[in-house]
Structures are given as C-alpha cells and as structure tokens.
Image 1 (spheres, rainbow, N blue to C red):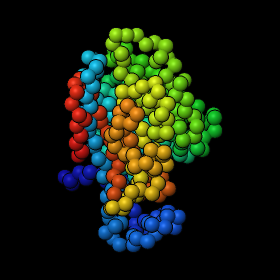
Image 2 (cartoon, rainbow, N blue to C red; image 1 turned 180 degrees about the vertical axis):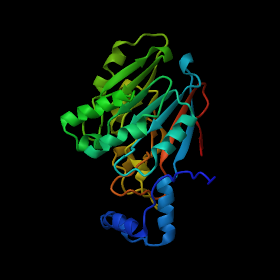
Image 3 (cartoon, one colour; image 1 turned 120 degrees about the horizontal axis):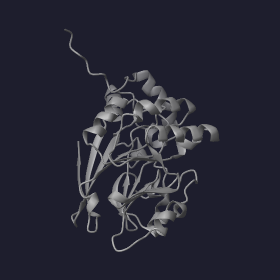
Length: 311
C-alpha cells in the first residue's frame, strides 16, 4: 500500500515569481532596493517565513479576574487576506483546534475581493469554540464590496456561527465577560462610544465584568483607554511583513507602529494590548523575517507578569 503523503502547506513560489512580485514593492522603498534579494537563500528564507505559522501562547494574570474566566483560553486570528493566503485551511484548523479554545476571535482583514467570499466556508467552517466566535472588520473587508455584498458577507459569518461586531458589544453572562467590537479605525468606521454603549449602561458593581475589546487597528486606542479595557486585541500591521535584520519595518500603517509598537504585547495608557502579526500578506504574497502567527491567551487570577512561549 503506498505511503499516504501529507498535503503541503501551500504551493511553492518560483524564483521568477518572487522577483517579479517583490520588484514593484522594492522600487517604492529605497532601503529595500539597495539590498540584493536574488539569491536562493533569501528566497528560501522568505518562503519559509511566509508559511511557518508560529503558535504564540500567552498566560495573562489579573487580580480581579472573574472566577468563571479562570483558565479560559482566547484564540486570535488576524489578517487572513484570503486573496493571497497560501497556508491551507487544514493547517490553520489543526493549530487552532489542538488548543480547544474557549473563545475564538478574528481581528479583521479576512478578504479583499468579491471572489474571496467563496473562500470563507473552507477556512472558517471547521473552527469551533466553547463560548463563541466573534469577528470585527478591517480596511480590506470594506474595500471592494458593495453594500449588498457586504451584507451578504456578514450573513455568511452568521451562517458559519460567527458573531460580527460592528461597534457593538456581546455579553456572555456565564463568563462575566463583555466582547466589545470596534469597527475598522483605518477606514473611519470606528465609534468606540457606540461600541461601549450597552456596556456602560449595564455596569453593576461590585464584580466588574472582563472587557475584551477587538479592533483591526490600534488607532482607536486612545478612545478605548477612556472607557477601559482588560485586553485589546488588534492586527493590521502584519508586524511589518518585511523586516531586514537590524532594521525596523518600513511600513506598519498605524500611529503606534510609527512609534515602535507594531507587534506583540504591550500595556499602553493602562490598556493591555496585543498586536498580531496576522496570517496573510498584502501588496506581495510574501513575508521576510516576520512569520505569521496564531495566538492563544489563557487568563488567570493573580498578579504575576505575563508569560510567553512560542512554538
């Protein structure tokens, strides 16, 4: 009986395709254009970094964490960019479901074109979470859809068991948790006050709920800080997507990114913030020194510093 082969994570990209796709990108960025990229070693590095999904695992500690949230795990996906994504749905599902997440969230930029609507089922249908699945929109989700197709897009999420949050909040009373979705800041769809409206109206001491805030971009951080958040999950930057050793990324597309905060965990203005590198790419379908990620946050009661490991 022949050996069963494991499907590859993606199709490979040829040297010619690599050079042609990156060429137009480099011509617009003088620093990158000065670095020789034609070698097989650099191509191999970029190919590896584009496909090698990292499992980022964080243990976060809160002195007043609601009892029901002790040990619960949130899985974050971001920036799938299904128009060019070469990581297979099976591989994403394998990484996500191996952790059996309690909550599953996507922080925007799932699609960019009308044809991507047909890809949602294969990537999202097999993902499950015990307490719910939530999604917010990114700039690319708004880019090329009419109002009619955008409504159809949201309906597809709902049919697959996902809850879109467009400046809305969803209460999970059994976890004493609010999931607050801020619509895309990059296209000025964000209205943080509206997103928090039901949260503020329902505040009941003495046991405050945990406030999990989702947004595509960190550009809403100042307003989120005014209302308060226990964890703000974002994406949009791709971690820079192309970052040469010893250099900061040239493009992060956020105010915080311009100040050096373009990936990872930070506490800014009193808000615990995570910026995901995401899974996909934009402009060119390659990453360099910035591997894609799927992120898991496990919540604990306590005062310890965050703990992090990657695999």
